[in-house]
Length: 334
Image (cartoon, rainbow, N blue to C red; front, side, top):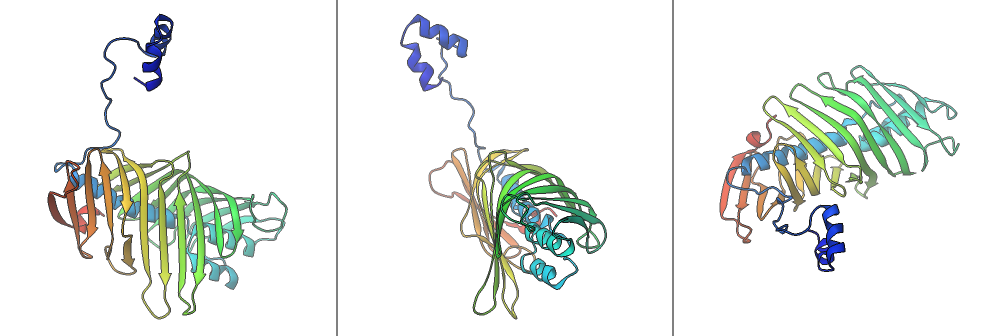
């Protein structure tokens, strides 16, 4: 029973009648409901860790899924290489390939298929700017010979001032398929892309994502794994892609907030330190994420590129009473 109804109950019969109409008066209504968060135990810790690990990979795929082929001009191609992200690439391709009074058309994907791009120039500025709406529809778009993208998204542009662009993405059955897995995305996300270049010509792209009230849903399926992730409002992610001159590029990923695993329940994620990935290497190289459930915590951390460590505090006493090392290829089932 809410505090409001409990207080009204003391005011007499009239208030009691109101409480009855609202859902009950008298009797024992103080039994607590089920906890919102999942209880993490020795029995389900592997499933929780696996879903969390796939969730990182899935959102990273979401970040890349909107990529389209570079436009056929040096300017657009340079913009595409510098960010490799949907918003900048689509705007760059649109602006470079079509007349300013007709910012729409069809862009070929690198290995077949098409993407239809339209920029609604609402302020008649003859170019992308805040308040404009970009839409992209993928038709069997292939970024490589073995993968394809279908569906689409719309972007309400909040800011467009190179090297920073931002907007509200609305995903509509955006689906990425490859031989090992498939991911489908629906819902909304506020995303900001910012590119910087330091004195050593190291390029860094920062991608910030925050989920608005409408929420975001991602479904991931592999031969041995199937899960749907529902991200609560204010769930956030931050990625950094760093490309040094003459050295191997690397990325970091940090997630925070509440997510529901359909097969398990809800948990809170907090990444510290961020997961680190060296490009062209399998598995993360560093990082950890704390998974908080109902009166329980599970820490998933990187031991090496082949091994993850699970530390479980099943009674929330502040001590991890069990530790278990697991190969990444068992947690990431694709």
